[in-house]
Length: 264
Image (tube, rainbow, N blue to C red; front, side, top):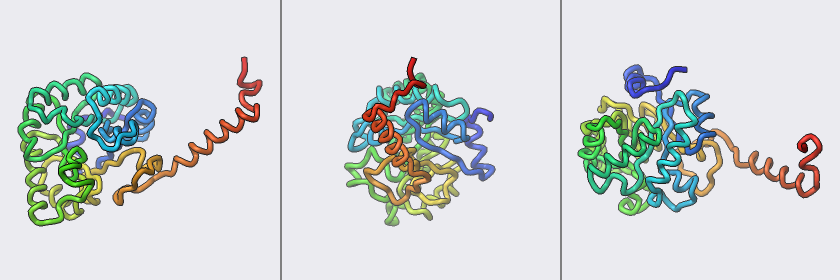
């Protein structure tokens, strides 16, 4: 299969072909997702919760993101690779943002994703002017959890709807090649998608977006700490893993493993 480029992603919106995006954090799953034809792999700062056991994404560092981006980059051949810019990697100013975005590209990413709307338009512009592609992220932005008072759906009031549309337009004006729309009413996300020339990737934003993204542990049924309404579990892999490890432990305790066929 041909390598996916930023031009292919733009073309998919033009041709009304849905974009498939999934998070990945290591080489093994990157290979698996790449082999089945996923379009975009996202090394998300969601690794804070689903990999590192943190309560939210705010504790994820640049070093974390660089390490996991490198692992995913070594596992994929076809998919386009986007890496999240973690908390405080871009908020302090354009110089910091450019430097940190560059580090993620050096680690193997082909683009970076950062949260915010009109407030980060200038930052997006600064990064893109250095030939680093940027994906935006508006709506429910997990790095703003304390300001938002938790993981709450955004865009319920008319004022919020207008602000989110303005945020999405600002991301586009800043030079982003695509934008994630998270945690907003489906009709609002559809309206934003129609207004924008760049592709939209939805997560908890209904079916009207140009593509969809989910956290891999959610869709595979591996993460049970909380289950957002927008998540569909396409597999229930936790029990088979538990069964396999339980059988392994039992065979060791009973002296069945390793057998002669596993010994030198």
